[in-house]
Image (tube, rainbow, N blue to C red):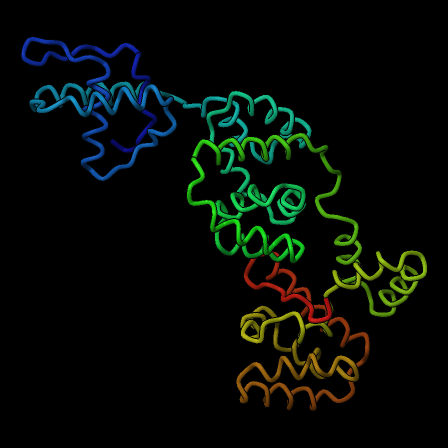
Length: 352
């Protein structure tokens, strides 16, 4: 067979194949197919079947013993004929349809459909929950009990759980981390119910016009603004709303933040994404308060390369402020793109 399709419904019509004068039932034929594919090392998505069907199939496999080659060949032929007759397979159910159309539906329509599916869905809600960003999960965990937070943390990958934990208040994070040690006896049904409840809670939240908050949006805009514009806007924000201005300052990442926010081991990786002539101008033009950032970059590359960049920078003479700012902006852009792609991670600012 060139491809493996979902198993046919165990109760559908299946032409009988004789076995010692006695016809084989549909369930027995399904059992033969599953046994044959399993012997080839293929794992079928049997969990997609209802629990009754899984139980029935397993019981049938447990009761069967030997099947002659002629019967096996006939069952396989019938099964292949059914697969060949299939032109197009749909996922089945609202959950499958939502996965198929992910990213193509409007947020309001997707939320409405998820609410419709949540009541009777057999799908695992954790498939969706574990795919959400930690920025979405953090506010939910802040409001939920410590026990629920421990279950959520246990279902996530280690790196994602660590990132989520870092976004929670210190006391809450400590209590949830300790509660993870108490999750060993939690029943699967309880974990499923928690997942359904959390998914329903998230689905009932109104759709947002923007995917990021105002602090992140203003910070991103100022990241790409000229230094004079950035300083002027921040000064104005401090006069109007000092708390908001402070949050924006923390969201901004500039060339000067490199020593505090970049892991020294990531410098070589970053430099591979910056053209050398641009890097030379950025380093040579980083004077005054920006000089420590340039020295940090130079200190975390090979001495030979650092000496070469210093020589090239000295040969350029005086760098125009505009050219230096554009070059440093290119370095920052490369860092931002790598951070967005998950290739590097920004460290928490020491002043936070």
